[in-house]
Length: 282
Image (cartoon, rainbow, N blue to C red; front, side, top):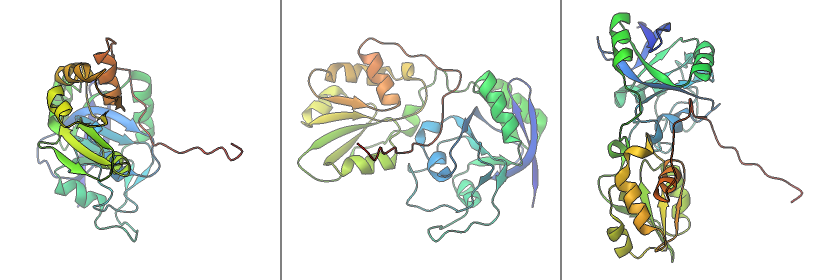
């Protein structure tokens, strides 16, 4: 059954569409609206903890074509606030598929809206920057939710996505402690191929890490404002000079702040896919 819906941005822009995924009744789903330019890999994007607090707009018009499966999850569950698509595939086809994208969204209580002019929306976000928004069945409710949505500024979203308990994966002579600020499973798989990885919660102290006697410390990706994760900055600052430390994404920003640098939010981040480049002659 088609469920009519409406997307409202904080600047008053309105987009009509149809609701999909979880049913929120009269409530609206709100968050910071961003866009992603991947042509495939929608499941990995939706389950990437770095999107906590955000509503993901897919610029690729057809989403859900090949379904979803348990292997391609990047986290224990999705942490995004919702998705926006032009056209959600009503039927999926792939030998690895275990369920439809719509069913996965419903299972994890993630709502979405389809039938949206994502080209118009992306151009708007490109020109004005990421902004709060909300979608639901009622325009007035969505408008009120968009107006009250604070986005991701000034919020510690890491606490929402980090692992509650330490755990280990992999084996080998090398031992790396990985801070989970929103660690993606694919990154963890790559690291575990190099040795033993001990994943620790974001609030783990430097003393606790040093006691594990690792060969190095990895600072993972994650969501939100690095200025709000002061406890991690303090731990990193204490680790510097005692252990090799390397980071990616939010982890790199936290490392920057630990050595005295500052961070600020861009109007919009470029969210897309990584593609390997190989120069055959070298």
